[in-house]
Image (cartoon, rainbow, N blue to C red):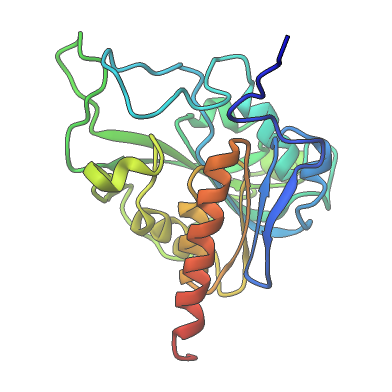
Length: 262
């Protein structure tokens, strides 16, 4: 009997580096894999990610995209992301202390403990248009939740109010950017607009900071980081999507290389 290989195979342990340069690293891998996590430099500057929400979303119509890997509700994403910031008890692993996280789709109550957050803020991405959503209810989605938090390594510092600091650029909590649609939405079912990611990255990092996205999707976080003179470290579990992220990152690097020095 002939065995047919899956169209999207699982990444091997440790993942596969699809691209590496002074500006960016893209890995096809499982972000829950300790060997993948170990490849991110400790003391990095920002965690910015959109993990699957565990809702197995289905609009009730045929769709261009298959279900997002990890969106079946079996993954405890706050706990998985804790390994990326450095779990309780670690002081040098992962994200640098007093630096920021942005996580789409989860509220602060779910994230504060696992990600060791001090101050938090509830942000809203206003997509400026109504999506399809569930067609059997009268309201269509036009926004997404984003939790911003300050990662504080020491529990005592969190209890004392450590991390209750403002972002580098203080802005309103509603960010209005049209979601990709039509032809632009063919890259990924939940693609984020690059200008939205630029807003988040510019508010919480400085030039040459390393921005990490362990659930990178089509790579919008990496593109935004590179276009604003930051560095990017991306991990994506779906091979075709990881290859797409690689191509977008390489295109952004080519654009950044043409920009005049400031």
